[in-house]
Image 1 (cartoon, rainbow, N blue to C red):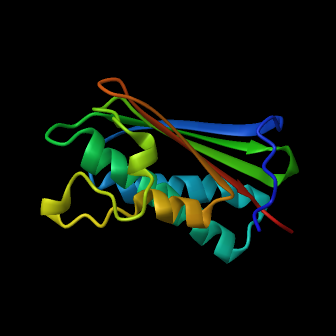
Image 2 (cartoon, one colour):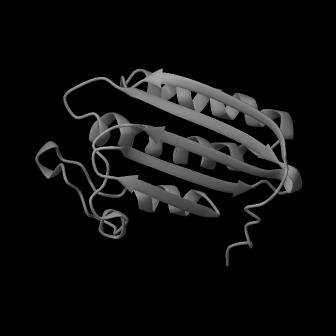
Image 3 (cartoon, helix red, strand yellow):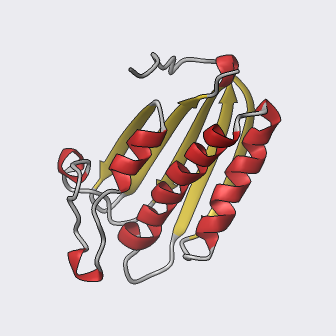
Length: 150
């Protein structure tokens, strides 16, 4: 069972970065988030979980939000009281018409390129909570919440 997530926890430290939606930047995003979160001395498993979830969120921006162009991906990492990590991954791409449908396992809008449709499922399996906000033509924001234990 998942822990209750306190969405109102006070922010103790914050990192903001903006990267072009290039596939080579996925590794930079996950490494930067992991390095920033290292100050909380997470376990190796917790760090791997965060890296995997961030990787999926950023890859979704690269593959789906900006299909045939390069746009910006904004990542904000907040370290909050109670060892809560909040990672916001935001794009200004095409948006998601039906977020509920997009969150269903195996749903993909890019089957011809052999996309599995498991991005949100992976994010949800490695985080305590995942919020998705999207507007067609305006972009998508994915917010990952992970409480670190210890």
